Length: 324
Image 1 (cartoon, rainbow, N blue to C red):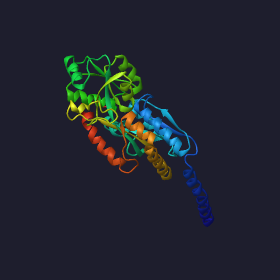
Image 2: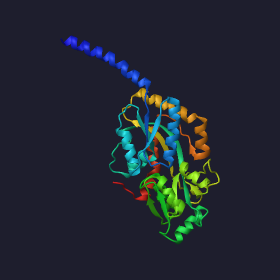
Image 3: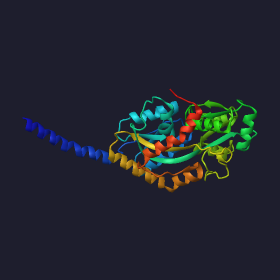
Image 4: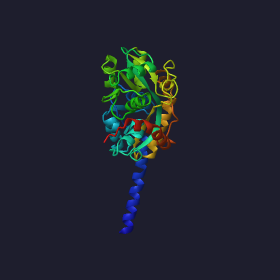
């Protein structure tokens, strides 16, 4: 009897194992959810949609972007972390989900290092400081002088407390020695209306969403948060040219729930690598959005995140923010 049961178990295993392998090899056999943990209209949304379009083309299935904003990106990130690890829910991970939130929250509803596999970074970017057109400041030095002459009068918008947009502003306040009021919004998109109208004075926003506003004449671009000027807008100085040592850069990536089968991860990684080589992506990244291309793939991802946390630690400390 025991031998018969062992034989049946072995037979069952031999039947189901090829079926599992076949299902993984056939991935994706249906549409894939792509979670963007921020509201529509910001840089994260733009990159999510461009990458989803490329992945749809390369893999022959629709990648559907779902915006799950709120709580500094935590709501959408938790949805990625807790999804069934079958390759049909992936999403955007970023400096918020993997670098900043683990430092800002004493307890997160997900573990960035254990619950999500970083499949690849897809972009490295600076933030761009844009100010309302009515503000009588045309460079960072003039902005600092205005803020110092009227402490507390001026304000900056962000996509929420503890985001890279918020912390870029807090680091600027600390290093420039100015008193400006932080006005948080639920995503970068909703903040733009108030900055454009002049209800809020300024905003540090990701290049993909801010640069079109500046190029379209809706806002004045005064400075980028990278150490050097951006290739996409070389006419805009780096803030560091006026505030020495000021640097606050961000990144976007694509992640999948931990436990996603290796064949699916490998196929997704290869598709992302191919997408980043597409001429239209390289043009949009460099010429239109002010993004740099990082080395693609999983290799070195964990080490990069560890180093990124060290780089952002001064901004987190300067902000004094704890989001518990």
